[in-house]
Length: 433
Ligand SMILES: [Zn+2]
Figure 1 (tube, rainbow, N blue to C red):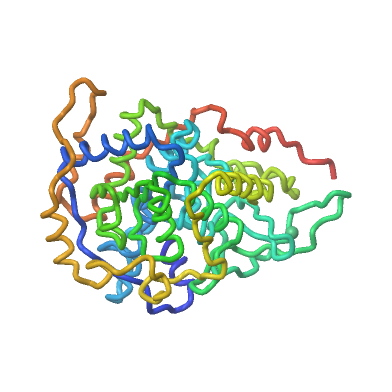
Figure 2: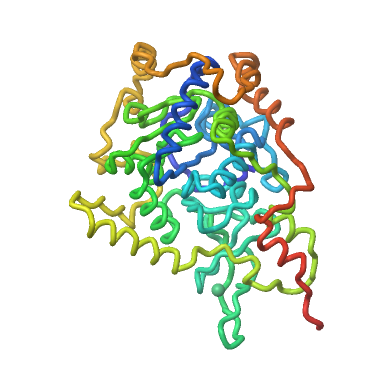
């Protein structure tokens, strides 16, 4: 549960802006903005999506800084009244939509701050994601640094040993002697090197950054989307609350991420693969009790060195072919903390929101000229906005989230190419003892 995760972290006083009021665009405005986003995606060469806790609230996992977020309520001495276990949560429409957008080539990479493992469980392959703050369904070896998918969420946070030996077998048949620990960062831990490198390089290549369900307050994750601006690219933010970088964004959509992803898929002519347990490696591991050590290759969640070096070569080639100033590499030692504490990021000056002047921020945003054409275009795909129109202000966010959970696809029969390791796992025969 998010609460268990939150309680497992060290005490920390700089959690950023908490509980800012949510803003809801009218359905017609949402449609106009998503149409614009779809057009930008069609012409973009390298789309990178940055995800935060807001994409998992529809799965029943509370966010942190929303009106009912873990940190917001903690400040009041309260806890969220809806809090599903990580093991019972299922990937949302947004998780499945993003995996489909990756598979179709519309999105090149995902950078996530989420530790809930739902991207992994949506069938996304490791080459397409950086998990900057860890993953509750992954354990890491203290000796060889390899990461392994677990059958259920790990019992600890803060990179503590979980009582299992490393699964890795070296060439020659010798086992690694390392111990596995969780890979969940505490506040002051360094970010995982390969994840950060990949996120940094893809963000530098991006000509369109799309931020979903994050207030962008944690660094360095929150600043990575802005790299697209230095690349003459665009930044799009989809979030109910205002975010730290609203003023720098080219487009801000205030509505639930699921509605945006669903509409986006329609506009791009993309079918979102429904969630299936067979896409979820953790499910397959849970239901294959071989009672022997699994082949480590089948559960390996390590970013291959070759992926990092290949991308470095691409960037190096681009740099040598470009007269423009190459992007400044990210500070590898930078740790995870909120922008409030981090005065070194001079490139990201504080705006009204960061200074806490929320009212003037909203006032200014509402006075901005509407550049989105919201007139319906009957020549385009028929769009079902009935779900969007139900949002408005009825009920609390938690109640809305509850209704969303009931709508999550849970079809068990989906079979497609994404079954990758699942097939291998199902075919796996344990050696005779
Ligand atoms: Zn190892």
